[in-house]
Image (tube, rainbow, N blue to C red):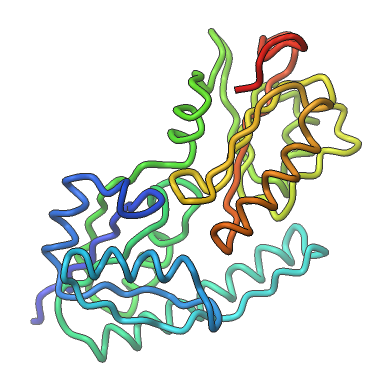
Amino acid sequence: MSAARRVVAIGMGMGPQHLTPEAVRALRSVDLVLAFEKGSHDPLLEVRRAVCADHDVRLVVVPDAERDRRESLDGPAYADAVADWHERRVAAWAHALAEHPGDVGLLVWGDPGLYDSTLRLLDALGGRFELAVEVVPGVSSLQLLAARHRLVLHDVTQPLHVTTARRLPEALAQGQRNVVVLLNRRVDLAGLGVEDWTMWWAANLGAGGEQAVAGRVRDVLAEVHTARERAEAADGWVMDLYLLRAPDLGGVGADEDAR
């Protein structure tokens, strides 16, 4: 009976500057790193390439499957589109594993446990290979957002709700008053009734184009849009998130500096 194939999901934060000593040890313990390539120019792949070069680890690039990203998809249709994309990604990994023996590392942006599907894909891949999966935590975007704005993500005695831009209206309708929003194709808060809420926003945290804006929504939303454009111009991509907090929970007031 063959031994289980060792695969290590390594949280890399936003790149080399966020690799923990544990992540470095894990990276140096594998024979190769698998990484998806999204299109002909993938700046996130280049970050992974640099990390592997720094630690003398072989990088094997796997063409990523196309994903249906139509904004009109919702509910079951959206779930089906994601499931189909995941299935084709698993097939690509299976092919790469069959061709490249040895212990495998996967460099996961941020942390493997927060809005990332690497571990789900590995669960599915386990139906094709016997795997011994290890997980190394990474610095998450939530941690970086809190650090950059010098804030505690939850108010005293209050919960923190984490969701996506697609599901923000649902969260607000449920009565959530302290919400972190990730996976934004854009920052669109029109019609949500949050003009007097406070937002702490940031993009590309830890990268060269890092941006951060905070203040009352009605006062800073235009600045957020401009900063988002600056981040994309600097890095070639945008990954942003923000905390929205209702006025009765406290926040940056009209006369306070937006940090």
